Amino acid sequence: MDYSSFDSLGIPNLEISPKGKFSIGRMFVMINDAKSAVLGKNNRCKIVVGEGASLIIGDKIGISNVTIVSTKSIVFGNNILVGGGATIVDTDFHSLDSEDWHSANDSKNMKSSPVVIKDNVFIGMNSIILKGVTVGSNVIVAAGSVVTKNIPDNQVWGGNPAKFIKMR
Image: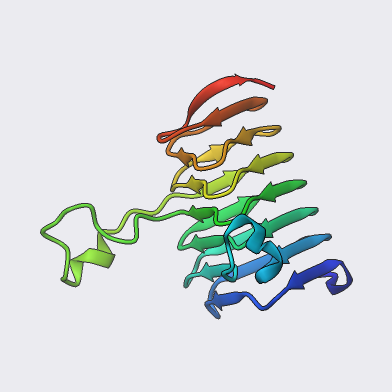
């Protein structure tokens, strides 16, 4: 990693498993402090990479007060902005079977599926990208969206759940 092209305003919360893979490309900017309070977000970025998981971040990426949790795989392409308070996860965190909750089967039956965010993407503030999603190149995700399925290239999506709005 070329640390001369890494800029963090404030201190992030990083939880990287020794058996996880975490890499950052060139020109990475992370905002973690009151400088982004204009958006009503004054929390640090939280990045979690679990045991055997990977988080690969490409070149020219900017994130503000974002939560990213990888239990399997999350890959960012290049030239991406992720707005304040957005969350990107590749897991449900729990089994979806209520019989498993509060037991050893909960984490054992938890589902995870890779997330891919391709090049030239803007993810608006407070958006959520869920497990198994690929966000295509040249995509805009409107603020507050919940992305539950793949978004093809060159589209604008928004809402909860996120739906197609228009072509770019």
